[in-house]
Length: 196
Image (cartoon, rainbow, N blue to C red; front, side, top):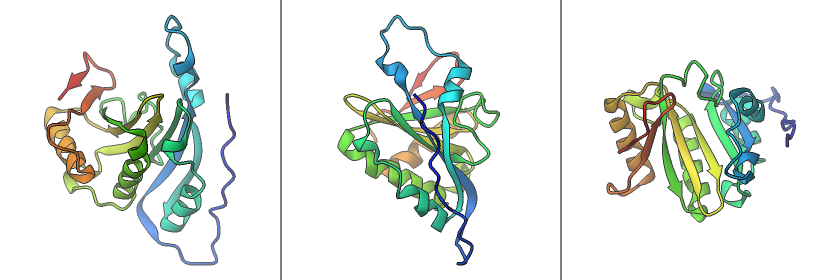
């Protein structure tokens, strides 16, 4: 199933707009493969890439709100819906040159907490409030709706134990996650998945 990108007008030049530090893009994917029987083989890279659809780019606060107000809230989406926010020059696929040496950290979320956590991360990224030592390591975030819970993924540029530890501390502080909660780290082209 494919839905064409939304036609959102972000070209109103009659008012002076408030520029963000970077340019970003919202994307979405409808993940039909979660409904397939277990014996179905995983989709290939090209098929996956074709399923990832750009909604719109923005580089001002006003254009962000013009797009964001039309996006569905993650906790109201059916299983299989993903939304992504990435820097505009980075595509939300592992194979993108900015992603392939990095990884992601995944947080499982209760459905009724998903929207507030997703929005908190969006505002932290576009508001440029992440610490200097990791703000340019974060390439984007993904929220994925599942049947019994949702997932938030933070994608980062370079995989290393030191950076992973900083990202974990920062995310836990920002989202007020208790220290004992385990976050799952995964390298995009891994030898193995690492749990911290």
